[in-house]
Every structure is written in C-alpha cells, then in structure tokens.
Image 1 (cartoon, rainbow, N blue to C red):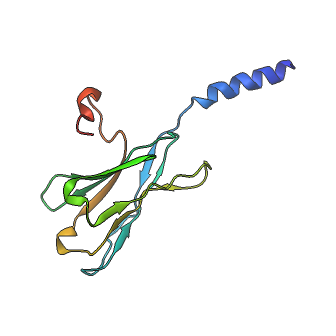
Image 2: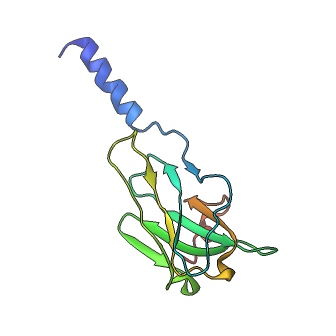
Length: 136
C-alpha cells in the first residue's frame, strides 16, 4: 500500500468519530388556524446520530412545558392526553445534506390547543443522566 494512502485511511477513521453540534430548527412566528382544522408544525433537525430521539412539548400560557410525544427510528410514544389528535413522523434520510424532520400534526383543532410547541432532540436537558430519562 502506498504510504500516502495509508495516511488517508487513518485520517478517515478518525474523522468518522468527529461530531458536529446537533441542532433543531422551528420556523419563527405564529401559526393561525380555525377550530376543527388540521395543522402541521414543522421541525427540522440535524444530527449525526443514526438513531435520534425527537420530542414534542406543549407549553400553555403561565404553564410549564408538558411532554407530548417521542419519536425514534423504530418506535414512538405519546403521553396519554396527546394520543388521539396528535401525531408526528420521523423523517430521516441517508444523505448528509438532506433535511431531517419530525413534523407535528394536530387534527380537529380545539381552542385549548393554543400554546407554544417545542421540538427537542435528545438529550433535551443536561444533568444527572441516571435520573434524566427515568420516565421514558
């Protein structure tokens, strides 16, 4: 094997483990819809993790964020109060430049759905990892 090729392969092996920062992007601004309609809230994310965990949270006025649902490559989970009208699909691609998303769809909108909705990529907070995901 040529010496320069051996150096190239070693460099590639080290770069495989190099990781950039994970990111989540939601479009700014309000979404306005009428009761009874269906609405989809967008969430784009970027991660090198091949099995990412994506979460949606709902925060009403003067309230704390409430866990709604979780999506992973091979599974999903909805909190009890968000099982009927709320859904999200994890869209992954094999191309690094293509976008990854987990749009949240709310069916048959109700006035009580008015809130701020957050999309998050695991880990959602920092702290003691032993207790952090205890309820998952």
